[in-house]
Image (tube, rainbow, N blue to C red; front, side, top):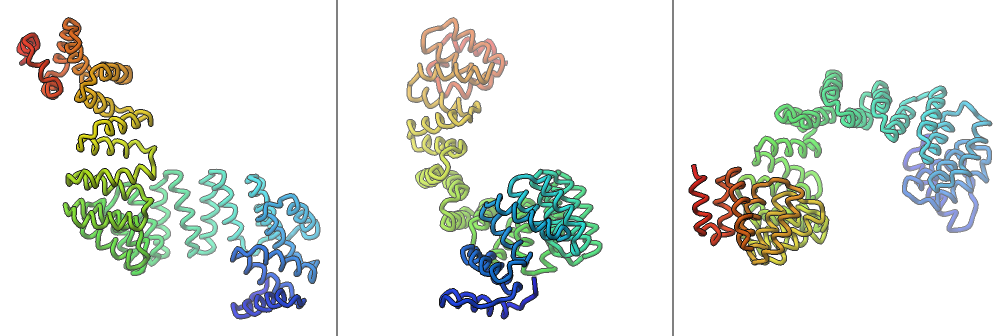
Length: 463
């Protein structure tokens, strides 16, 4: 395609749209049509792009460039069979045109035939004056196949041609990440920085690799270099803030998060992390302020509501905590963590039916940890629903076999049901396994532990 300034492009587009309005027919050379069509495609105006390609081919029917753009449009519109026929004709007419092979690869990729797409791109390399674009496309095809090492090698070839191809650099590092080769990524980035020590992008990526392996001091040093090189580097400040948070340098983390808010629009992620830093600094007032900003900025961010839930619960504001967790549950009611919080809060508010509802939901969602079973059992015991508690303990026992906490409760219920012999046997076994735990269980069954027979057993086993 010919090179045009933005002014000439605007002239051609204005002239083309004027032609459409007046139903006139103006002549454009093929390069001008390319500029017009690509402008509409870049802006998602496919109807106008199709009108331009139709008129362009009527005026320049032998233009391979326009026909290739038509192929691109057909592929975009998922008209793959028509595109394939046109591509074959172009290939027969000019078997050395790299763009034809690139469009063929695009079509094959759309059909999920990624290996065949790679073969087409390998053919394109034979005729390419500038191979960088082809290597990039090959790298993407290997990514589709999860062939990360092959993808990395292709993206690395792009950097051999253009050392400032940061898109390729990101992709190389991404491949290392997917291969869990952080050490190799660090070596690669250090060598890159030896050649270009003032690349803020490379320092940023180096910091991310150190962060991934938990080397937070080294990560911080790398991010410091990134923001010194570019004082407006949003990603550098954001990663620096996250690293400072990991290092428990919360005041500095807040300062860097605030810088990101000056460089970009407000966002819930940043507000949430500032709130977490203030909470870590034991400043609940400021933490609540930023958690409120979090959910105001993004009312559908359940993590924001969870943060409000947790802090309000810690501060004893149970009604506010309940309101927050209910909003989190409206967003994601299949999250057992939220149902756990719901049960904890409603239990504090003496809403026992609601608390059991939350625990039932946890079990239904597969969150069947011992603490969930015990919480459910203890509420039933408190409500005097002994038979239900007994059945529940037996269910829990099938999953958590030989658990002493369940055994204590089962023994006490046997006393309640007047099964003294079985009760004594179970209690004795539990006491022998963990004598100290009876002090917790006696709060649930004070009358049982006042029985003379139980007192005698306790004395006989007390060390």
